[in-house]
Length: 397
Image 1 (cartoon, one colour):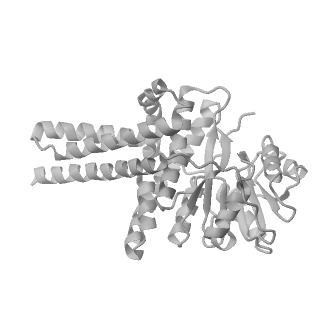
Image 2 (cartoon, rainbow, N blue to C red):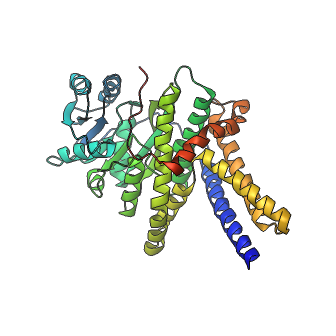
Image 3 (tube, rainbow, N blue to C red):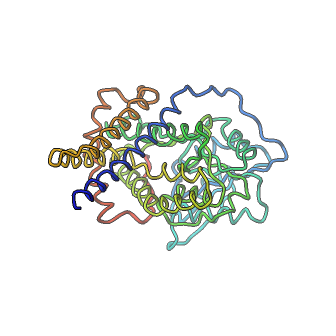
């Protein structure tokens, strides 16, 4: 009886791991064909109204550059709204000086980007636009991408996520290179694969365009540290699954200081794990209840652990199933774990070969196990004391 339970339990764990790794491989496989070049960006129809909302907390150093990049693509009738949220610097003055409309919010009990976005959207309710586009205050948008995003949201009547990537700082560590590659897999490769499969994507933080009625479908007011991902899943559950638009590019800079980068990665990965724990069961239940394949696809996407943790999980499962097989001569759980390993490492190599060779050499790619060792304390911290509060990442000067 005990042996049967052990075989069933280990087999179930290995099967789940295999399904997740095969899902990752499928996403990467669909993302391999070359992206079509986009030289022509359609202009918004004159009667279409657009508002760009930027939440900003102490962003005086960099918000001027962000606003300058946006203003070059805005029409006379478009609105540029900055929400100066709990600021103690000159963010509001800098934004006004750059031509933006600024509203200031002070609430030390409700802190975080979600509350700031909700404040901005509430301000627009008196004269709502057709399309609202959300940008972070430390990001740059490619010329023409703003109208591309807005047009796509208008045509599809869905939330649209831009191709959001992280620029490398002028000098960075090996950890920075590996982290940037992992972010590229998460924010470009996997959403592109999902889009080509006809599946929805997650919202990844900035460069998000939504029809006004869609933006109002569920509240964004939240102090969750992964508020964008949460909002996207809430929208999907309400019938508004996000889609990905690779030609529309938005970039921000990975902090060059290790402490600042660690804060940012902790927020991202702890937030993902919290979302996984709370949303995967809901998505699976509603996918079954509503017979919606898009929710099943999102459940699988959310369930895929951050890349380093996924590899660590496979190492643990592979070791346990191998020891069990050697002792019991029951090899099925180990064979399932081995198949998961083949799928996982094939996906990583293919993603690197197609999208990462310019940023990360094969020799650097081979150092991922060392990078994983550096990440272990981050995951232990999640088990002991997960990050709950939104903490702004310190910017480079």
